Image (tube, rainbow, N blue to C red; front, side):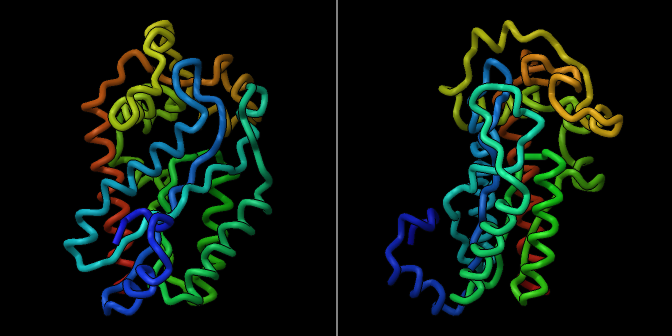
Length: 251
């Protein structure tokens, strides 16, 4: 069976569900929004997909059939709304889609829905938390490693913990690791350091990237990014995803 859920036929999915092994569907959650002048609009999707793929070997070793669902590429993204290419949808619309996906998986007999998210817009994170709670109330196990929570945030890079991490060293390293051909290297080298913290700006009431001090839709230190850091960060994020999934399945 193919780990890419949609590349299988329906009999293959049926066989997995009847195999006696727990079946988990991993949903990469991202956005379509501006990420500086050097990263593509689908940066968050790339990162979430990479996290899911890195998790597959450990899940197989744990005896779990894991499938990666087609990526949820649209989300609340109003903070980046002033930049061309950003597509933002409402929290209600995003939650409706996510909960309907969960209901469908639950009805088929999937043991767990796992959310692999790297789009940390506050509205999106709130939506994901609410959707996870609603699905759990319906009886579906949900694994959601929330990297905005302090415990998990501490496992990631210093830039991530600083809050100055949108299209900076953290995200640029991850894209350089998995999709280097999508990084505009000339623009990356021309992107001066921007230490303004998004989390601090949000707490002070900023509603847009521009208000937060990001006139080019990036925060952090993109010139310091390396694919090696990206590899290490994928391992850390995937480890948290695997732990969340195994705990949910066993619970």
